[in-house]
Length: 362
Image 1 (tube, rainbow, N blue to C red):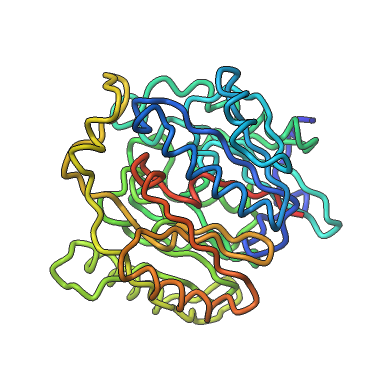
Image 2: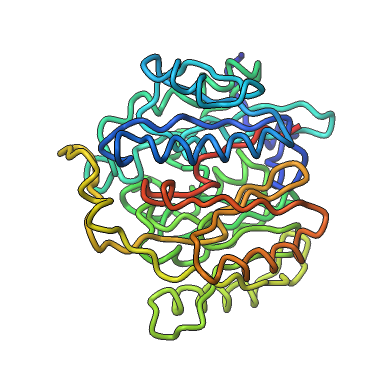
């Protein structure tokens, strides 16, 4: 691995859409008992199910701590590669590298700065020093050269169409707890130069009560260039209604980097999901970690799926909206198999399937 001192745009590299071909997928094993209930055992089963289904379509690498290596190796299928890595928690989407490609098929990675979704003021845990090294370790193992940016950015805060368009939220990237020393124009310049995009669309807010400060990957995503899936509710009394309507209006009146109007497909959100008393009490307490409290509403969304080669790994919540989301995604991705994974245990940790995966493009 070589650290490159130039920028991807000037070298002819771009960030591809997630729907473009992958050479593999990375995950990290959950274990911390202050964020994953019952010593992370239910979450580990859910992660293993996600990994095993992805591995049907592309190679999967799972990073694990030394103390969990034997356990993870036992629980995961033998076709999944298990690699010992130090990290603070298992959100590879946000702490892993963002990969870029050129027209010759070469791949490189971008390492961003990370502050646990808000730093010492609003961050979700402390410390996060091991997380800051994950991108570099993944790229070292993959044999990919690395660009480095000092912008605090999590992978879940951006979506691209691979053709020059990027969508993000003001709630996250313009949040004072991320990059108070950068102006909006400076952030845009970094995104343009490191991801090789030419059009940035700023949605105001993410999903209601999303503790990541409103990551875009929970609200909307590109199905393909010019086509967007958006989380939705018809309940005007639900706080999510105003957020989704605001995004719909903005996207409807926007065009992408090629001047196309967007086709927007609404995906009804699951019925509101709340943390139970049993779930809250089965977490270890730590003064350095955000506690999951009884009655807290969780930011459940079907948009937090992972696009794998030839398939969609879709979170479901055992409610009536599961089938509605399945049927809509079957229409949108008619050339891919839709695989439903019960993901409440992942949601209880603060995210979902897209948040625990990070693709390495071909």
